[in-house]
Structures are given as structure tokens and as C-alpha cells.
Image (tube, rainbow, N blue to C red; front, side):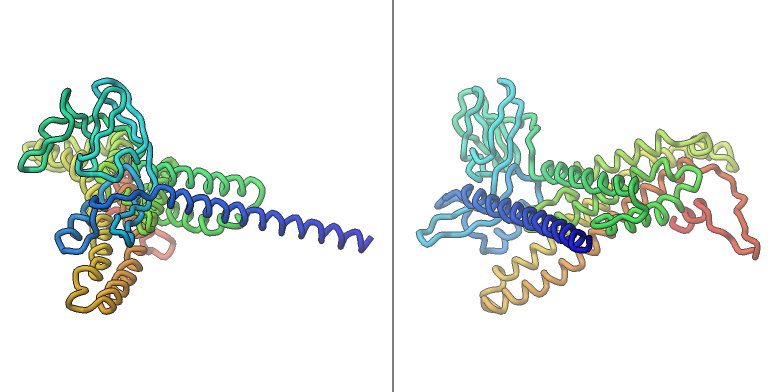
Length: 409
């Protein structure tokens, strides 16, 4: 009987080992295929996109890098024969032109962003200029630019492309769906999660107990905790993804931060109770002549200032962080004449390393601030204005949602 049990354990152990080995092999194979696919997308353009050396070229490259793009451009290098090779992979381009829908891969532009490469699809001539896709007018064979470098014989199209930012949003959304679904399933079978769930559980509890509960109140915090958790992890993971070599800058796109701010605006506007709207539109306890003025100020604060502060804070901090990191990396090019190649490279790497460590903290901090402010605005909208605060047996104040909001403001 003992031998049977030992053999059974040994077989289970071997099966587990084989499963782990199989997963490892699959991961290695996927990375191997990915590397070859990246190499396969390398394109050679001798005079296009030359090496970035001067300060002006570095500034232009940084500003271009933080923008959204229709492809993943990982890096470029100059071959021994002088040809400029670009490593990356394309993304689907989906646009609506005067002739209807047109779809193709972004590799058709051959990394051109100056409107020189013309792509013909569905009877339309398309060019890419400053990360935007334009349709040439009838009879035009190339784009013409004015003194401000704007197209004069082309117009923008409706762009539904899967850009780099859209790819990042889809990836993070799918990742969150998988990991949090797995965490939820663990609670149906066990009290304490295992594996990656142990990492997620403290963060979930932190958002619930330190952000949602104190700012919204014990009666209504559960209703909004799901949204706050989604926003927190969505922003945090995207911020961390922006520190990878893939060049994601999703939360540094104004459209993304504006959409997140609008979600918060809609939630606290729809959820606002009678007290919230009464204090906003007809403030009690003040002279009647001043109430209309206060109503205008309160409405501007609720519909303009609050969402604007949410979107600008996140957008500005993340974009500034990317610019600072890339500016420090560019030291190896801009100061190589004065410091030498070794000195400029060493200084660049040391400074960029320490700033990147700070950026890891900023990634969490910006997610926390956005979630905290969203919880604060929602709590102000759903709060029942009862100013009788609870006291414990010893007579010390027990902070409730209104206390926490007041202290934060």
C-alpha cells in the first residue's frame, strides 16, 4: 500500500513537472516566433529617417515618440552599407474615405510620416503625415504643403485604425479580465487566494478600504467600488506598460485621459442625490442674491473644472515623465562631443535609471490620485448632508466619509 502511494505521488509530481516544462517551452517558442517576426518586418530605407544626432532632431524625435502611432517602431540602426533599417511590426489601418472603407497594414507606408509614400486603396490615394492619415484630392499624385507644413490638397479621413494606444488598451483590458476572473473564481473554492491572486488581493482591499469606503461612505461604497478598481488598475498597468521598450504612452494621450474623466463625470452626475443638486443650484444658508452666482460657480466646477483637473493631471504627469526619461537618454548623443562617448553614455544611463525608478513610483501615484479624486467627487455627489458626526465611547471623533472628504480638500 505504501509503495502504491509513493508511486502515485511520483506520477503526479512528474505530471506537474511536465506541465511546467510544457508551459515554459510554449513561452520560449512564442518569444522565438516573435523575435523572428520582428526581424522579418525590418525595412531598408537608405535616405529615409536618418540617425538622430543633433539637439533639434532629438527634440523632434521625442515629441514624435510620445504621440500615438499606426505601428510599433522598436528601434532603428544603420547597416554597414549605409542603409537605414527599422525594426518593429505593423498594425491594421482602418479608414473611411470618400470611396468607402479602406483597410490595409501600416507597413504599406514603409515607416514614412512625411506624406511621401502614397498608398492606393479602394480608389483613394492615402498618405501619412505627422501620424495622421490624409486622403489626396482627385487628380493629386503627391501631397503639397504650405509654409506651416499643412496639407493643402488633402484632407483627414475617419480613422478607426488599431493604433499603438488602442492595442495597449485592448491588451490591458484582456489582461485584467483574465487575472481578475481567475481571482474571483478562487474565492468560490478557497478563502485565501493562491498564486498571482496573492498579489492582487492586498491591492483590491487597499482600494476598497482606503479609497472607496472613506470617501463614499459605508452605505454606498460597494456600488462604486467596481468602477474605482477598474480605473485604478487600468491606469496603473498602462503607466507601467509605458516604461517598457514598446513605447506605449496610452495615459499620455489626451483623448484617453479625457474619456476616463468623462466616465467619472457621468457617474457622479447621474448618481447625485437631492442634497447634492440643492447645494449646487440653490445653496442654503446664503443670501438669495448670491445664490445664482454660486450656482454658476458650482456648475462650472462640477462639469468643467473637476473633469479637467482629472484629465490634465494624468496626461501632463505621464507625458512629462516620458519626455524627461527620453531627454536623459538623449544625453549620449547631444553631449558626446564634450564628454566623449563613454562619459555621455555613462551619464545618460545613470540618470535615466534613477528617473525610471521614480517613474515606477509615479505610475502608482497617478493611478492612486485619479482614483482618489474620482471617489471624492462621487462621495460628494451621493453624500447625505448630515453634520452630526459619530463619537466613540471615549469621546474621540470617529472619521466618517464627510470628515475624510473635508480633510482631503
